[in-house]
Image (cartoon, rainbow, N blue to C red; front, top):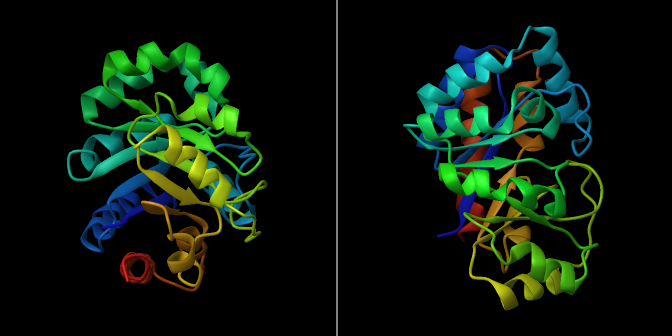
Length: 246
């Protein structure tokens, strides 16, 4: 069965909502949860996730909120931290790895940490039993893909196109998929531009999908109550999980 990874913005509209939404997504069939760490300059994210980042920060999000939420969620479902490198570096990568190991957080997704720079931290990740998720993209050469996936753990994040999340561009991915499969059996998940309409097609020839903007778009709707947001996001997650496995 193909897997569904869901991204949500941590702490928006508040930490209790994040916890409730996470557990509802588990019930809806989500296999892994990306807790997105709000950041003021999310360079890989489109306007939807960027808006949620800024609103969470305006509401007073602190990294302590991430830790509190993760301590409660990670024992219940597979949880990863998705964030930009600055906050991890500022407090110390080892600090977060120790907390991840303590809570059971399984991996970090750091889109602005290139493979070559991330290699320096790999021994620390391995020591704590936490995966540093690798990225591949249509712009990568076969040679670079081979190096990236050689020691990849948990899953490989295939970026569907060059650019930012949620923009819906299309690029040929068959060469990337073939290059990955040639060098590793690590599961390959596709992200960027995955929603209810595109999920079935994008899931072809890969092992799972990563969905963010489609969920966060509902999260931002001001005319819905928190309960309605959770219900709509969970219904969407259930639909996407069904579509990728048809």
